[in-house]
Amino acid sequence: MKSHTLRPYLSSEKLAKPDELAYKLATLACSKVQPTPEAVQMVKNRIIDNTAVAIAALNDRPVIIAREMALAHPARNSQRGGSPIIGVDASDSLVSPEWAAWANGTAVRQLDFHDTFLARDYSHPADNIPPLLAVAQSRLLSGEALISAILVAYEVQVALVKAISLHQHAIDHIAHLGVSVAAGLGKLLNLDHEVIYQAIQQALHVTVTTRQSRKGQISSWKAYAPAHAGKLAIEAIDRCMRGEGAPSPIYEGEDSVLAQVLDGKDARYEIFLPEPNEPLLAILETYTKEHSAEYQAQALIDLAFEIKAQLTDLSSIETIVIHTSHHTHKVIGTGSGDPEKFDPHASRETLDHSIMYIFAVALEDGAWHHITSYTPERTNKPSTIALWKKISTCEDPKWTEAYHAPDPKEKAFGGSVVVTLKDGTVHHFEKRIANAHPNGKRPFIYENYAHKFKTLTTDRLTKETQDLFLTTVSRLEDLTSDQLLALNVSIPKATLQSSGTAEKGLFQ
Image 1 (tube, one colour):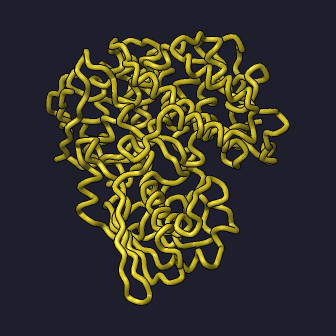
Image 2: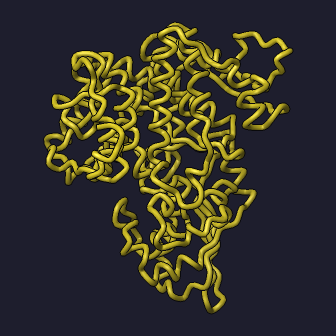
Image 3: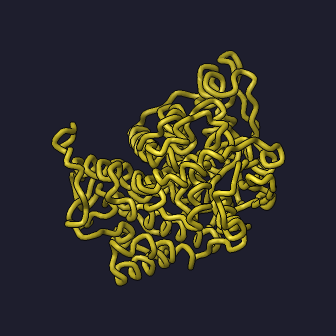
């Protein structure tokens, strides 16, 4: 890996184009290195993971609305330019690729149940896959091309997330996603370096939004936001392929992102990117979720299960204090200052960002379910509310340091839990990483992804359909353009619910 220093420049300073970060990311997108077998397998795993959580969410309101909006934009030519929507029979309807990315990206993100990468910022790198797959299908490309594009997108996103904190400035993490999708699309379409460079800049320019989507009463926009970034990146690619340029230099300019939105005129970042002949392995540093909640809750959910086996009388608990990282404390803990995180009537999107609620339910139930753990009946259970209010978080420098450890083997996203009983007895518990993490007790491998897929789709897909999908994904590098359509699994039309509001929207 090679380090690249990133800082703002005054207009009067001379910054050579090849020294701009967007130019270097475009160079990465043009790399010709062959994927490793391990990276290819992880791409397959993440496609399985995305499909599982998307199918499970197909009849959730945000997904229905995104699907109905997309269906209002059919492809002009079904033989070229069209992409399928997950859940919808491809022979019945193909839509414009940016709208397929919108619908499919929302479905993937809705349950907050797919992969993650945490460093200086947050990310769900598999959010790159829906827009890349939609364009690959619309342009009749191969599985091999899709694999290379996904690996580039992961490489770009992981590099940015390691180096640049957006959340510190209340900027949503989709700003990194727009850039990585644009880079992946450039690789997918084998575009000229200049086109990719301009598209990366455009994508960043239009995806800088605030983190209010993840604060307070969190709305369903949290599911739409990554899909929006993917859609905008596709549109940026289209414009740049037609000859348009972009605000430049988008990172380093004196009125641009670093100087005016992030750390200001004195900002300094070190971005590590692969050398020209290095394999793209960033995807292997990312990890998926075993439980449908914010990733920083994964290890703590596993720990709650362990504590339940030791503390059978939860009514004897006086207080629970979770000592954890700055990020966990501030985003999903009491450090956020969000009273909604203790509200039994809060939205699912808010509750899956409340470690106090999550820990209370996991401790009571000794289990976690993507639906039943969030129902109004569950959130309003009196014993849960009582336990919930006893839980707080605090930042511990030890856990903050582990969260930001540069060595992936040293990184940790868990915490220490201090349980004080009413009789004064104090119990201490600790868990560094989730069981399913690559360095955890039982890391997720293909069989775990396949099991997750079958579990989440069992009520919507037949066993034959499940097996066919898994077999198709296993041959991803050999899939032709026609076979690539099979990666969007459909369910019976009668089981796809309607919002009942389509006639009220702008798109019919």
